[in-house]
Length: 249
Image (cartoon, rainbow, N blue to C red):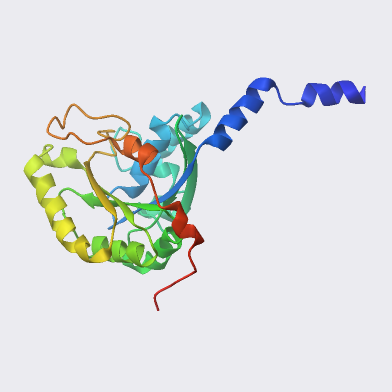
């Protein structure tokens, strides 16, 4: 009887194959950062949704929470997927660092959602300390702000060399290419001093999914990759992990 039960509880070949496939995928650790209300939590929620990481019961709970705490009208508020603290939901802000795992057919990811408020900057540094890449979000209506610069400097000091410049809420400025280009130029001028290996600018709408998992028809002037396409293919310097520990004081 014991033998029969053990056999019935053993993993099936399909599960073994799935686990083996997952183990072969490379892991990318990244964080979202930037100024308050630039859409960091919404972006992560959108990533989890569009990569099919949300179960039906979670979606039902999210729809209920969106009606109670949401800030997006009748639409689902994807930020609530990662803003788990009651204070975060009531105030509509991120306070603590929230980590989420998700995977695509090509890669595994661990993302840290970090707060944008100045008083929680140390929590942003915590999230950046284990990241290989930073998604720096900028509200397309606001441009480069002081907290944008502060978070970028912290990312540089902690050894992050790969940046995605996510110009978010592009829908709120009518998908204006000129405004996007100006933000990219402003950030590029500032970032020259920070030693980044790559800065990849992407116009996007985290709320509506433009250029998140696939290229949006609403930005025909943009010829670069979607966010997921870039995250799946970006090559980070894994050899840096083997270098002696250094930290600026």
